[in-house]
Image 1 (cartoon, rainbow, N blue to C red):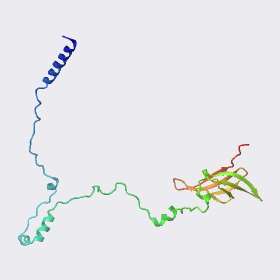
Image 2: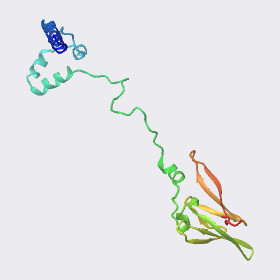
Image 3: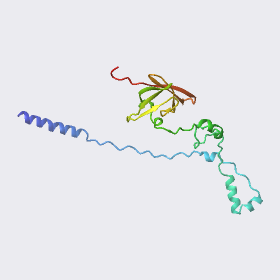
Image 4: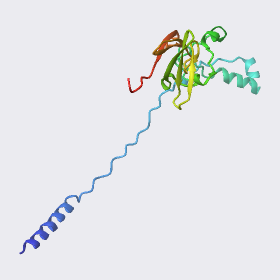
Length: 199
């Protein structure tokens, strides 16, 4: 026999042995049937004791309205004291008197009046400072290239800053803002004069 025929013979024997090994089918699982024991429900245990009716009540029992009222008295009573209501939120918000706290909490939003109040300080560059009579003035440039002359006391920046002082090489700006705790904080910022490349 050649090697090829031996290999084919081994494969046929292997398939035959593997196929015959699982000839016994597994039996279906057993179905268990039992009656469920009846336990008294909560409604039956909380039912009120029946009331013995007198003869006068039997006469009025023929009236359908009184029978409904009698059935209503036998109804199940639910006592909800000490139980959480699932429809109410667990965390209750404290309601404050808005008439007293409204003026303190509400801070008027500043509306920008000039073009410099619409631009953030980080976008402005101080191009020049010059002296006119007894005080200094500055030339501030927008990112678009437009220049503005600024003096002491002008409003500048998005955060409502005011120019507090103009020195020979920088402009000092004071901003009043509110921190996370609700307190007003004064922040001092400065715009430094841009040095030319030759210096």
